[in-house]
Length: 168
Image 1 (cartoon, rainbow, N blue to C red):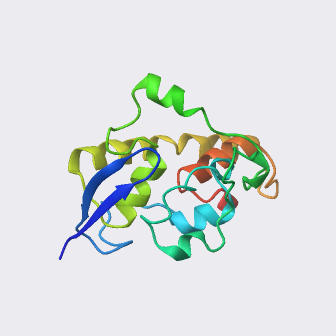
Image 2 (tube, rainbow, N blue to C red):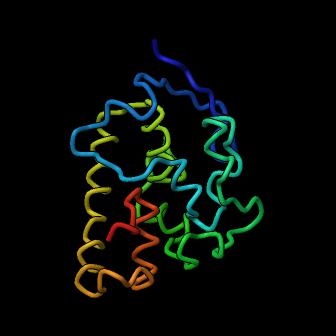
């Protein structure tokens, strides 16, 4: 049975969507994220300022160990302690955002993880997710297997896209 979610946060007021799949289940066969949103938030992403106003939309346990900064972006909260993000204004300018997910890819992933499906947008975002894999190749080419601190910006970027950079 679908569950309708009503969103009232800083970016969206009265936006609704249906969760038609069980959380964390029935992903597209080409979409195999290595980390859940909860794991990503606990590790430290986006300077901690990404999900501070939308806790009502997602499970409470996602936020128990999340590294959040309710004020401004705090890069020290990122897993690698570096900034690997472009400002939201750049994403808006480049047309990378879908109107239903004004925060970008991670918002799409959180909602997809929770069971929302939008066929065309899902395919677009999965294609983008697959494209980020190029950073894995760059890390493997330039870093030894025991150099977990090598290329921290690329590793942090991979983390932002649900790849586990600790496995490279």
